[in-house]
Image (cartoon, rainbow, N blue to C red; front, side, top):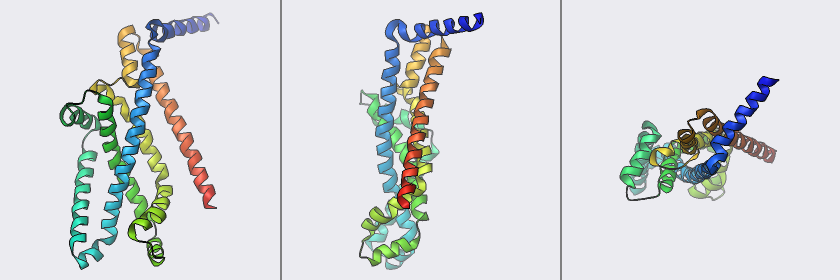
Length: 247
């Protein structure tokens, strides 16, 4: 019993040292808000890029032979767009995200003083490459008869993708897409490399001030765990609702 009391007292004193003294809890709140802000905007950027790249790649794969036989400017433009998308995917998936972040901050956007927008763009571009392949697999999994039925009803290619193919593909890839979002949340922990006060950086700064690594870093880990569990729960609810709507 005495040992439990001593352990509780030690944890309380560590909590006070790390978060109450000097109001260092504000650093954690500031870091959490920065992490959520970066993740949210990067998520939107990644989805937009991913959908566009997936549409180009899947369109090329599905219509290559037909358009090649016809020739013309349309096939040349689609081939060029597909080549650009493949280069983008190769570079982004073949280099570490931390290196991409450093290149964006110190080279591409070197004149920007605020690192948060740079991190949003960098993580968004990185996530877009993975989202693109996820969506492309979903689009390619949609039965070809869906395209033909939509065309027979008078829909053009873009309306067919928008109203018929993409909604079905989204349902098919939702679990993989959810995993990518979870990875994105955790990946933002490297934002401190460019001087951003994110959640991980806040915990490390507290550790450097108090010389007490356990409380600050375990708290950071628990906050990330809570965020991931919340996102997993929300994705599970969304999946169940989509399945219910199919009935």
